[in-house]
Image (tube, rainbow, N blue to C red; front, top):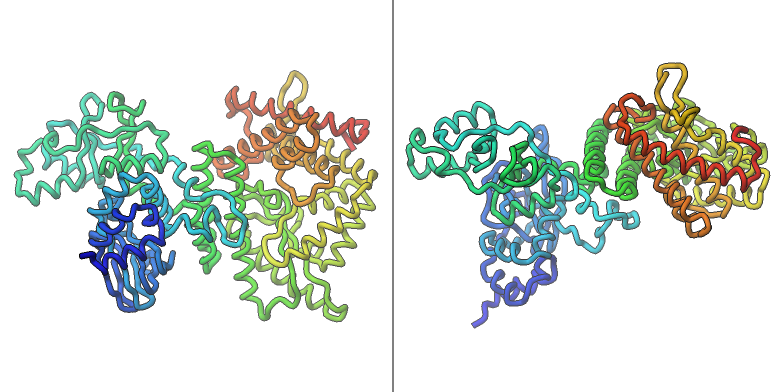
Amino acid sequence: MKNTIAARIADFLKNFPPFDLLQQEQLYTLASEVKVVYVEKGRSIFKAGEEQHQYFYVVNKGAVSVLKPQNDIFETIDKCDEGDIFGLRPLFAKENYLLETLAVEESILYGIPIDIFKPIAENHPRVREFLLQSFASNTRNPYASGDKGKLLTSTPPVVAAQNLFELQPAPITRKVITISPATTVQKAAQKMKSRMVGSLVVVEDNIPVGIVTDENFRDLVANGMALEAVPVSEIMSSPVICYSKGITISQAQLTMMKHGIDHICITEDGTPNSEVIGILSAHNIMLSEGNNPSILMKAIQRSNSTNELKKIRNKITLLLRGYLESNIPLNLISKIIFELNDASIKRIVERCIKKMPAPPPAEFAWLSLGSQGRKEQLLQTDQDNAIIFDDVAPEHHAATKAYFLELAKKVNKRLSIIGYEYCPVNTMAKNEQWCKSLSEWKEQVALWITNAGNDELLLSSIFFDFDISYGNVKLSNALSDHIFELTRNNKRFTSALAAVTLRNPPPLGFFRQFVVEHDGENKDTFDIKKRAITPLTDAGRLLILSHEVKNLSNTSERFDKLTQLEPSNRELYLACSFASKALLKFRTKQGIKERNNGRFIKLEELSKEEKMKLKRCFRSLKEVQDLVKIRFEISGYHV
């Protein structure tokens, strides 16, 4: 006779991943072993530090909060409701829980037995992949239709953030503590305690032959064996599972799950036949989860202080470093970092509005200008921003502007605290020149475009690269439409803009040497922004503007679009697209290395290969500037 309770459980589970991937017979067998758990509101399911349960859980009814303990305060990092899974740690790691769970409503849970489910997961790649992604990202349902492929539910699909997290290099411990096979268990335990490590690598001639962990010692004690007489060769895990230092988080997790281990040995060539250079533990992988973009996005959205955001910003830098080390394509990196930057700005604006004495007196838009507007701000450089507010009655204009200037002052200050320095030329919304009504902005840009001197061209070009970070997009679109109307068929303006585009020729002097700064605090360094990145950015902006293409501000994407618009110049534009990404990546790596904005490069520290790569980028810059010079009939490289 069929078990009606198991049938009801199976009918419920089949509607949710990863159980919807199982065959009906598998699902029914599993459901027959499920434990039904009733939890009162306010009761904990498991606590941080508690020993693992024999189950992970699915919410049948009610809601469960997942909490992270931090300095005696519990931060809610997720809320699980019907069909969501949580408590996966026993499936992947043999250690106590790191998080805490609390029923925020009267709840019924299904406890899925680990010992029965684990063989199913190991033999079902899609189930295993789902659970790994869910566990690695602390995301209860990484395939949820509402959030799939998104960092923000309110933004268009970008990339699967969890996948990029898993492609990061696994966090390897370089200081490996080794012992010989003849070392007694007692001496090994003493060494492990004195060095405060959880594992030792057993080596012969520095070649790994086994691994011992504190779990091995606990098993011996439980069995009553004499520790002083037993050599570690009798209890060690062998043969050793080895990888080279390029192993990713995803590879490490799958390997540990497949072999039922918590440690991987890192060797020179990735085999047990070469020297040990590191150790990788499941615990270290768990600690690295805080740098997952999905987790960082949640932390940004829930942050309640500027100092919290500052700490999150430091984690974003670690995330960026991991992406660069893994050679993730720069266009994907840029999109992820842009979303995290943009969310940080949005959160600051939201919190500052709450600190104002009253709600905004009119609709407004907070614009990010410059590199953030182009989705190219990987490092924390100085801030460039502006405010557009809706037109109000003349008698209310002064008070409305005063309100937004005060708001901008608060926002600019907090952006500075989290790492975005004040703009040296004061291109910030707290400056009344950059905080205007829509009508005022239309008048201002019309003045800049009709009086196209060098300064006016620089100021007007800023508004071809902006992006709205907060507020009413209709205001920014209205301004954008107005600008394009003013520049349409305006040959005088485009010619003047072309001349400015050529103000910085390719940065190579006589005998193909780099042009460096001749004085000041950055004397003898190469200014990669001024002499390479900005000229290429200017050229891309001018050329895409000449085709009247709107809403495309990223430099490499502009050149990619130009390959479609001008097939005859396809090879040149592809080279420029590559050069723009290569220069940005080069600057970012230098900035991370030197812990600054990466703008000024010490040439003596570059390898010959790095110099050659830069020079190839300069060749593309020269060719596109030659094209601009001919097309817009500019007689020289200088205005």
